[in-house]
Length: 311
Length: 245
Image (tube, rainbow over all chains, first blue to last red; front, top):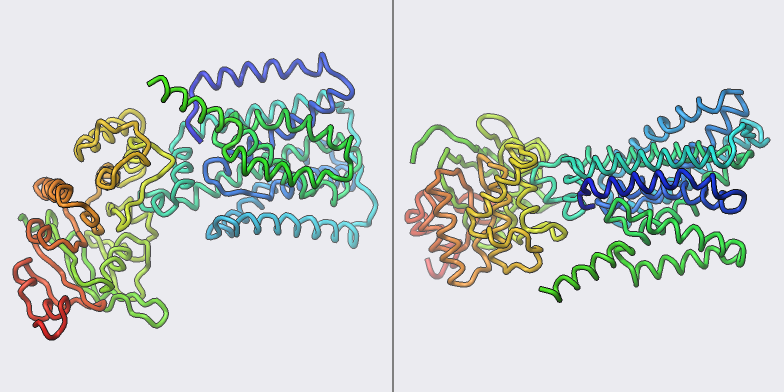
C-alpha cells in the first residue's frame, strides 16, 4: 500500500461528512442498502490494512465478525447485559483470538494461509453452533435495542472513519513501510532487520478487532442471532471480492469496490436468490482475469500509460 | 590493515540437512577493516556458511559471534540489527518498490535506524555512492543486472552494517561491468569496511582480499593470503582434481 498524503485524508474526511447525511435523505430500502454498504466498507478497509500490503489473503473475517454478533446475542439474551458491554468485550476477544491465529500461522504463506483461515473460520462456526445447541439450549438469541437503521449506519460510519484514519497513519509509519517490504519479499524483509512476525501479528490483530466491532454493531439489525448465520463464510468471501474489486493497494480502494458491488449484490439477491454463489464465483474470476489490481490499480495503470505517451 | 581483535568469529560451525553435512566444523575470524574471501568449488558450502552468519539458517552445532556476542541463535532480523548486512547470490530486490525505496528499506530498518528526511538523504547518498543516483525514481524492473546489484549493495550500505556479507556479488557480470564492480568493492575496502565475500572470480580475489578461507566439501582446507592459498597443493587439487595437482 502506498503512503497517502494529506490530500487523500482531506478527501476522505469530506466523503465521511457527506456520507453522514445519507440517513437524512434516504430511508427504508435505500437506507438499508446504505447500512450494508457501510458495513462492508468498514470490513473491507480493515481487511485491506493487513492483506493489502502483505498479500496474505485472509478468509477469517467471518469468524471475527461472528464473534461480534454472537457475543452481543449471547450477552444480551442470556445475561441481560446492556448492548455496550459486548460492544466493548467482543472486539477484545476477537483481537486476542486473531493474535493467537496470527502467531500460529506465521510460518504459513500463500495458499496455505488462505486455506488455514477458511478452515479455522468454519471450525469456529461449527464449534459455537455445537456449544450453543448442546449446552446453552438451542433457543435463539434475541437482540432487542432501540437502535434504528440510521443509528447503526452512523456507528458503522464512525468505525469506517477510524479504520481509514488508522490506515492512513500506519501507511506513513515505519510499520506501514515494513508491511510493504514484507509483501514484496519476506526474506529480504527479515534480512534488512524487520521483525516480520510482530508486524504481521499487529495488523492481523487489528483487522480481527474491527471485524468483531462491526459484527457487534450490526447485530441489533437482525434482532435474532443464530450462530450459523453470523459466522457466515460468504461474508469472508464478499469482503475479499469487494476489497480486490476496488484495489487493495490503496487505502481508498475498497471504497471504490464496496459501493457498486453492494448494489449489484442486492440486485442479484432479489433477481436470482438461488444463484448467488454462482455469481460470486463469476465475480472472483472476473477480478482475477480482468482487474488483478482492482479498479484503482487499473486507473493508475492507465494514468502511467498516458504519462508515458506525453513524455 | 589495523588489527583490533576479531569482529566476526566463526568457531566449530556445522550445518546438517538431514544426512547431508553441508558445512563441517568451520572456524575462522574476521578482523575489523579486513576483507576476507570465502572461496571454494561449487557446492562446497560457501553460501550455506553465509546463510548461517546472516541468520537465514541456524547452525546445527558451533558458535558464531560478533564482537563477542553470540549471534548464531538469533533470528535474521536481530542479526541485521546487530550489524550484519548481506547481499544475495541471486540479487533480491523489492519489485513493487522503486530504486530509492529499495535503498530506503535498508536505511529505515538496518543497524542504524533512520526515519523521514534523514533516512531519505542517507539513501540518496548511498545511491550516489554506488553511482546510481540518476535512477532514483525508476522502477527496479527497468534496471540492468549490474544496476540491480548496485541497488542491492546500496540497500545494504544504507543500514550501515559493521560486517558486510557479499555473496557472489560479482557473478554474472560482463568484463566491463566486472571492472566497475571490482572498483566499487575496492572503494569499500579503502573505506575500511569489514567484509566477507564469497567469490569465484580469481582476479577479484587477488585484487580485493586480505585473506582467504578455502572450503571444499564443507570443510576448511586452507587459510591465508590469496597468493598463499591459490598456490596451495590441496586447494589446487580441490579445484582441479588429483591429476592436475
